[in-house]
Length: 358
Ligand SMILES: [Zn+2]
Image (cartoon, rainbow, N blue to C red):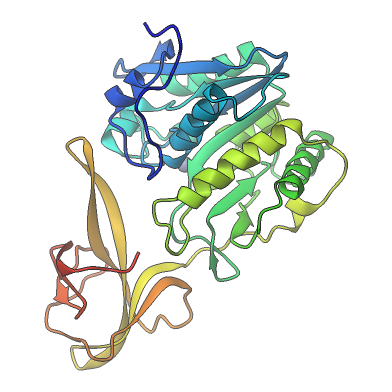
């Protein structure tokens, strides 16, 4: 045991994927239960104040930025960069370890935990709700990652926020209004450019954790970490997420509409677009995207064809003039890409020479 509870030798700086055994070994966690495949579900408490806050991540095993948000909070707490005198931060870095080790969305039994918060058939969702009912927090943070497709008025959505609905009419109940105010005051206090910060849709999903909790009077904020141009590893989202949490702790519930005024995010953003490429006697735009998967304990990147045709109306992170490119290999949407794109050459989804701007 490590009685000092120090996190040893860890750098979260590039949001690297941590094998679960390494994550477990980083800190003197408490084991609060086991997944369906008997992996430990761990937790920790930062601070000894009277106001209880719950934070969890890793509900979807391929959404890992929230884990790094939590590790950064631990590090800041240990180095006394944050004052949690009034608070107890209860944290679970990975609520779905069976999905995390596979780098997939669904748990070991093939169930999406975020669609199991009505029937509670998985041990992981049952564990999370039991933990929350024991603690009765004044506020929760539910940490996820969003896909690259999300943008806000054409800017990549590096973070999306949501104070979920508690029923299908999406009524702004007094509880919901209080949390919207609290988040709005936090956004004002953190004094950050909000370009690229969106509101996630508040359509009611009765089986999603945040919506279910709101329906039960348990206030919570969803933080969806995303990419930005030049920041595909989501560092900006991690740092922003940490600040949203810290500022929300102490923010007042006085009426303010900063959160309400955030634009609702939209889908359709592409990653790399080669424009005006010569392909089978046509001139087309070719969109390429990354697909991340596990290769042993490490993350592998496969480049696939996202779309092709006239893509001029779609926002994109990176655009490359492809008018000098002539492709000879067939392209197939959602399949690993093969082709000589000039500055970069792909073979079966792998870059064999050159590189893509990141
Ligand atoms: Zn998710």
